[in-house]
Every structure is written in structure tokens, then in C-alpha cells.
Length: 182
Ligand SMILES: Nc1ncnc2c1ncn2[C@@H]1O[C@H](COP(=O)(O)OP(=O)(O)O)[C@@H](O)[C@H]1O
Ligand SMILES: O=C(O)[C@H](O)[C@@H](O)[C@H](O)[C@H](O)COP(=O)(O)O
Image (cartoon, rainbow, N blue to C red; front, side, top):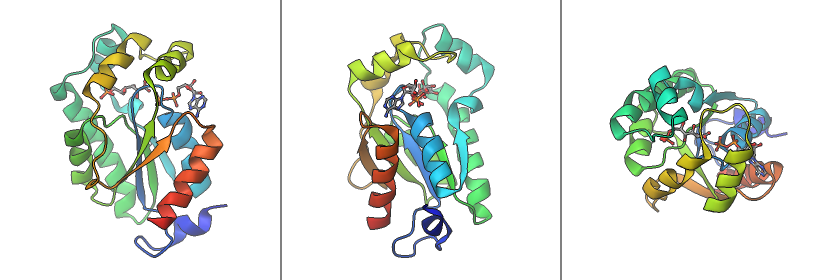
């Protein structure tokens, strides 16, 4: 449905940005929304969680949040994976928590066209969703640590905020509409 927007030249009026990072705390729906958005746009989806080195995964699984230093290589891996297809003229949607402004700046260093879609959610809903999720390394106990370091996208960042408590299809439709307008 949105293929036309995806194929429009980057920066053309009404076009969707070539590089989108769906961000927010664990459980906000980055993967669910990112997969659906990429499918709607006909572009590649990159799952940031798959790009962690095993030691990061082990640390989070044991209930310890990552440090800034441990996030650096991971953010660089995601940035590289975003920049490659965009450099070939292809669009991409990536899921990455990108909780701090400095993390978003690090990603944008690889690809300045990135637009961040911030999925806004309350702590109770995020905790519930992570607690109910099966087969993921992230324990619900780490959700509070994510809210503690979260820096909301500021007005001077290329970012849109979406209500992550709405159904996934609605979040995706709103995202596409707002990106075309901005
Ligand atoms: N908008 C939504 N409404 C209801 N459930 C959702 C929504 N988005 C995600 N979920 C569910 O919440 C859980 C966490 O979603 P996920 O996409 O893995 O979040 P994240 O990637 O941000 O950690 C999953 O079980 C997912 O199916
Ligand atoms: O789906 C999730 O539960 C989250 O995305 C989760 O996996 C985590 O947020 C990061 O991958 C770790 O990095 P941060 O501590 O920087 O969020």
C-alpha cells in the first residue's frame, strides 16, 4: 500500500525517509511495529537485538543493564547495517532502543538521514509486555533501568513520537502518515 512512498526519491515531498529507527524501552513494540512498518514500505527490517555480542546478551539475561561502553560496538554494528542499504538507494527500518541522545547521534553518524520513531509507553504496560514475551533474553526487571536512562527525543532531533499503546496496525498507519507530512 505504501510502496509508492517508499519508492519516491529521498527528500521528495510526501516521501517516507529511507532510514527509520524505531526506538524506545523494552516492550514498547520496536520489533512488532518495525517488522510491520518495513513490510508496509517494502523495505528491509534490521533487528537490533540480533546484533548484540554474546556477552551483552548474557549480561542482560542475568539482569544487569548494559553500560555505555558495552553499547558502543552494538550501536556501531546497527549503524553499519543501516548505512549499507541506504548507500545503495534502498530503504530500511531498524529496531534499536536508542535510549540516550548520544546513542541516537552515534547511529546518525553512520546515516544522517535517519528518522527516529519513538514509541511512547508507560512503565506498567512495558513491564507487562516484557513479562509475557516468550523466548527473549531481556527480563522484565530491566525495564525500570531503561526508563531511568531514557532521554526523550528533543525538538532538534529528527524524531516523531507515537502512542505505543495503540494497536500495531494503527501505530504503523499513523507513522507513515506523519512521516509523509513532515
Ligand atoms: N501495540 C501493541 N499492542 C499490543 N501488544 C504489543 C504491541 N506492540 C508489541 N506488543 C507485544 O509486546 C511484546 C513486546 O513487543 P516487542 O515488539 O518485542 O517490543 P520491543 O522490541 O520494543 O522490546 C510482544 O509480545 C509484542 O507482541
Ligand atoms: O526488545 C527488547 O527487550 C529491548 O530492545 C532490549 O533487547 C534492549 O533494550 C536492548 O537490546 C539493549 O540495549 P539497551 O539497554 O541500550 O536498551
